[in-house]
Image 1: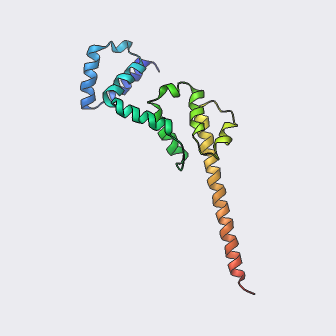
Image 2: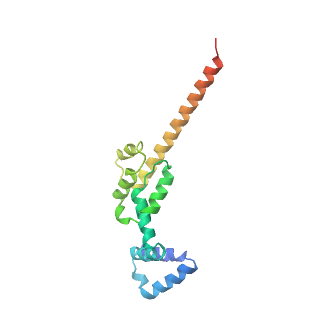
Image 3: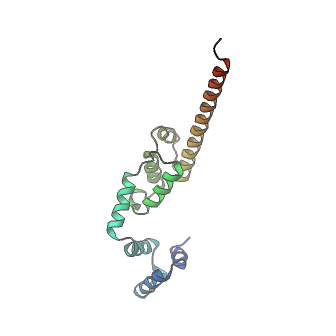
Length: 156
């Protein structure tokens, strides 16, 4: 998709205040020649003041999966990474950053796959998470079954 079309689609969703702001931008710039990066820069300057952008950038830099589900982590990763494009400027860097902050048990299992496409890294992490949940559920069932059998035997 070309930059001009991206800008048209983005500005179509603007509400009252943003429409007024956009009108002033169209008076100052040749919109047909504007790049998507310039549009984002202008938009962020208007609606995400520098201290807010710095805070979001810091949140991205310190983001780790921790106790979050992979989907929660990925949502935050995607949201915060908009404010640090230099850290995820290409697919390989994006994968490396995402994987480096995954849960320590999951990280090597994704890293050893040699994945270079972000969506594939996320997919692999989701599969590993589902497998771990399934394993935990089976372990819990086995434990409950064992406890039920030992309590039904009772004292001899």
